[in-house]
Image 1: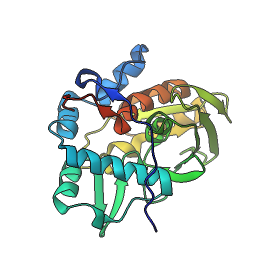
Image 2 (image 1 turned 180 degrees about the vertical axis):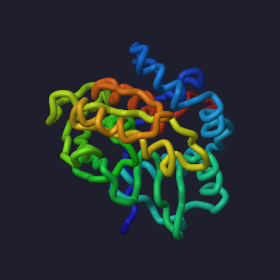
Image 3 (image 1 turned 60 degrees about the horizontal axis):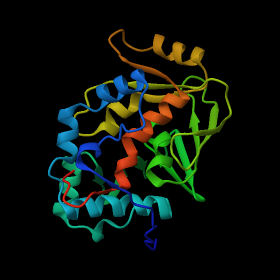
Image 4 (image 1 turned 90 degrees about the vertical axis):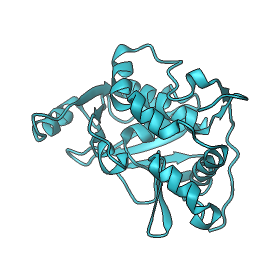
Length: 243
């Protein structure tokens, strides 16, 4: 595969509003979910002291997913940079290849996103719903309901905040809260799901341990949560700002 870097518009942000981007959030439930999913300690571990070189590599990998539906060759990056991104749980290389870079996975998942004609799998429901905000382009998303395996299709406009359409009248987004460990894709993301209806979410919840916790969000709330999480990933910090 020939790597073609896609030009995604970059918007400057100040350090105070860098990660996550809560500038458009006013819904108390979405803010509560975001706080539970992204603790201050986790945010500091991900973004604190990220070098310009690592930041550039991270964005290049995401740009490649958006341009080609796949990451660039691992040889384009130094082992030190990839190790740093891995420790921060931003990019993980496995088997000599880049396997995932939130929000994208090289392996098939239940969450397929199409942006500008390119199809790529997202790691979880919130990742899929946040892709339009990150890319600043309209996105078509298809998710499989964990209960019945029905396809739920929806569109998010280029602002990353507005639903264009949805194939079901009331899909629900479940954002499970779990210990992340070294890789959220292997832990927390497995409980961040999109259901075709409230009844099918309730059926799934009855199959989970009593200790399981999370947030039951509407589709619109899930889109807002995804935008707050992923909009900053392809934004450039303001001059002199530290992520």
